Length: 159
Length: 262
Image 1 (cartoon, chains in turn yellow, purple):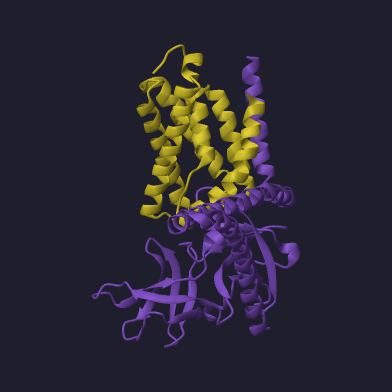
Image 2 (cartoon, rainbow over the protein chains, first blue to last red):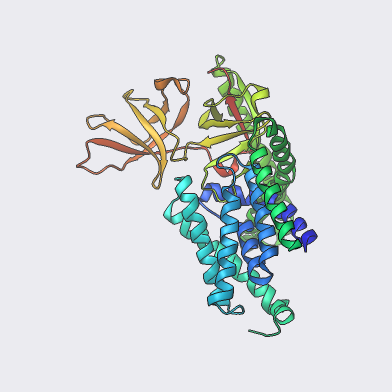
């Protein structure tokens, strides 16, 4: 699992600070690959794997970017803990609606915290960004659950 | 018990690392990491550019097919060549503009820098360049592209630096209206680039050029910023607020110039 996460990180980080970052800069927001990956790890795997991802991905972005050091790591760790809590306590693990709702809350939390530090939000950009992230999250969830049957393998039940 | 101890050690190492990495002597490590990630990041950016060009070529092919299906194949290869040439031409034009700017402003020393990274969310409205204090960069130096102001150097490390863009809300830039010579404050906002604090009796015409002001000693005077698009302030306001448009497309910036002797 660690090796897989490192490989994903090596692909996702240059993409995030490259084309996706450029897109986000010009449109006031975009798809946050690292956040979506953190949500997927928290939803489909255990808390430990998700926290490991949050620390690795968060530190990578904090080291690469200037500004408030530790902010990305904090946001990802908080989001993972929130996702894990919601998945275990309130929600049904195999519900796509609840999974997407959790991603939505994760995104809102992320933008709210970042908005406090960087005052560059634009409502249209945020709306488009949240929609794009939810769409990508939905597609990945669909692929993992319906196509690759991850829930069938790991949780012993189907949607 | 043992697992708990391992976890405690890991957390302790993480905290130590977080503190260590903040210290000045850790800067080269972070610079190296930025440049290292900048290589695949630039490769992804180049791939992204090619995808966009290919997309534009495909749309063109679609139109051409309707007009003349016999020439479609020939058009395809020609369009692909044109797209490639346009990309080169665009780059050439930008470099030519930069050269013109450099020749017209010989008092400025321009240091070319490559854009090597962006923030993943776009909320920082900044990017990272591959130049740092060892190249003579200092905080608050102006950054230009094609002769237009793009932003300023905000944070400087040894081999990399962060550039805040004009669209950043926390970056306030004194700007002069070229016609009336009235100075206002430019910053990013939810409505785009806005110029505030312009006296009500100022005569403003859409299309009027705006240039940097030497007020506060932040920037050299006379660098083009953009043109007035429209007046957006309400009638009851005591100052005029103008929306400014810049011809520089942030999403296509690959090379910028830093004015190092302002």
